[in-house]
Length: 100
Image 1 (cartoon, rainbow, N blue to C red):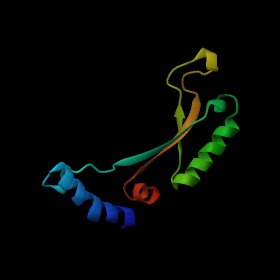
Image 2: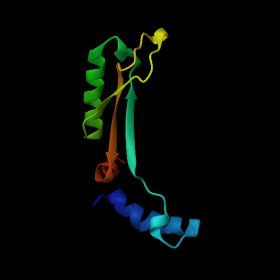
Image 3: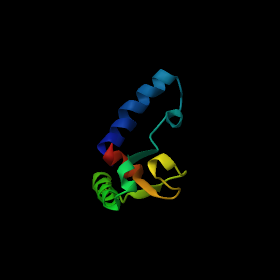
Image 4: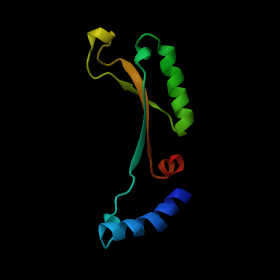
C-alpha cells in the first residue's frame, strides 16, 4: 500500500473525525480521482504539438493520455467542433495515491 494512503488513513482521518464531529470514518471526505489536463491552443494549426504533449503527459502520469475535443466552433480561433485541442489523464485508486 502507498505511504500517503497509509498516512491519510492513520493520521488525517482520525483528526478530521474529531474536527467534523462524526463517528464513522466513512463520513470523512476522501480523494476519488485526480485529473491532469493540458490545453493546447496552438494544436489547432500543428498536430505534432498535440502528439508531443500527449506523450509527455503519458510520461508524467504513467497512464495513457486521452485527447480532448472542442465542444463548440469558435471562428476567431479558427476552431471547429470536434477538433482535438488538448489531452487529459484521470488517475484513480493506487495510481492516484502514487502520483499525489
